[in-house]
Length: 165
Image (tube, rainbow, N blue to C red; front, top):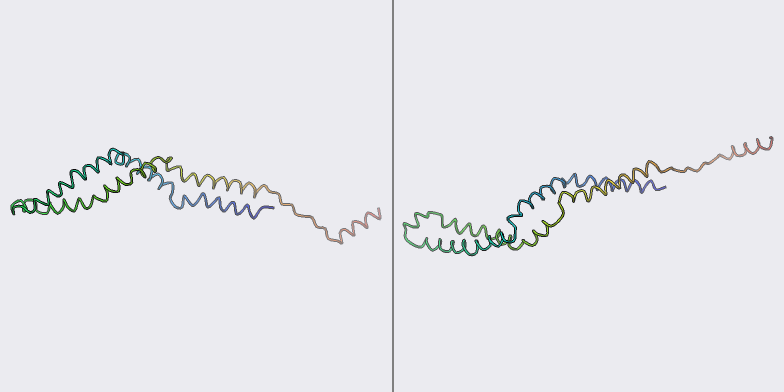
């Protein structure tokens, strides 16, 4: 008689099936797959190298040159009114982005190399469905053997009836 353990298996199966749905895993996995696909051209090894090269070899020197222009005549400074501050701020703003892209390229390739993320919720949900099916089958098909107990007065009555016959 395994009925108690079957109910436990059923509960685990229900949890494995419902938890990914409650957490929104199928939708989030689909969104993650779309994001990985959208970033593929940007995170390509050559594209990242080109971005880093532009940042380091073009924009940083351009920012240094722009800062030097502000030290010139008042007329140039008026014409560039606030632009020079924006160049410096933009370089500071984009430095972490370019650095992260460069440092995380290999990690991106690892994640992009995984199977389709939409499958991951099924890696949890299918075993849950299997456990549910097994537990329900065992619960509804297992025959419970109940021992037959006969009160002693019926046994005595039966034995007396056999002696008379």
